[in-house]
Length: 296
Length: 108
Image (tube, rainbow over all chains, first blue to last red; front, side):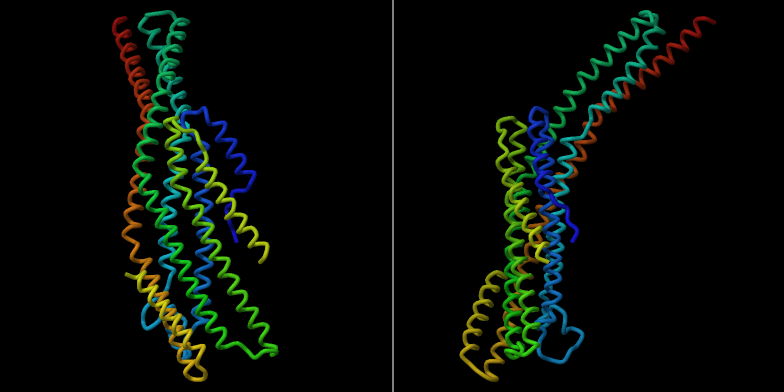
């Protein structure tokens, strides 16, 4: 199973970035940690939802009704009504992707190097100024170069604070306006995951019901293979349920971390408690997945 | 509504199960079939409940998409500082050419 994970070392280096960027105008490291943590939760969500889809595909066979096979026998249908959860999972995954995309563009805006562009423009400007000053016979060539250099430095010095002020203003405005939607979306995602857990628990009930009805006789050679298959299915369900719980704990921390970074732009608060909480939850989810891959 | 339906269907399935374990033979088997149908109907209700959340999701997604657009706009806006300097440079280049032409005319 291919997964993008944030390892312990990466997380430690990300915290170093936070500390180092504490003096900078925009807390670049914090934005990166928020973006990477959310991406990691999305990756785990995609994995878990894929496992649920596979579980459903197996479930419709295990729990098929006792009647002749027709075209609908192995479809998630009961009395003509669908209990196919796949479209609901995909929709939620796409919604989560929008959230991660938002945090990604925010991180890009916070870290983008506008200064080098300004530096280049300033150098070009001063190199253009020199011939003009010379040609108007205002000063000689040596002094013209000096004047052009001073002018270029002045433009450069004035432009940098303007750019930083614009960047901080934009981050503040955008983060303020999106805080509520971010909270709503994370609440919806965790609520949906709880309902999805309910769906899986129902599937488990049905699997147990069918398993008991068709279980081979005690001491028969078929019994052990049969039980092993059922035990694997029940174990898989346990793991999916635990994974959804772990993902929810991480998602719940995103709005507070977002708000914490927004407040830090005003320098009223430099706490990273919420962000630390999010990173810890992401570490737990990743450790959980690592231990699962070891048992497979 | 769907949430209530899930709870009621689940409760009914549980009662049918209690009844089924006290029965034997055909009655028990029929009750288990009924229980399985109720479980699957509860799953239908959960899926419908998830579908009902879509408008709320859409509102939040639209809000975040607007924020993404705002970030892109801000990026363009900040880049304009560099562009403004480039435009000043272009103006200076133009003025330099005008001065050159004027100087050449004066020599004639």
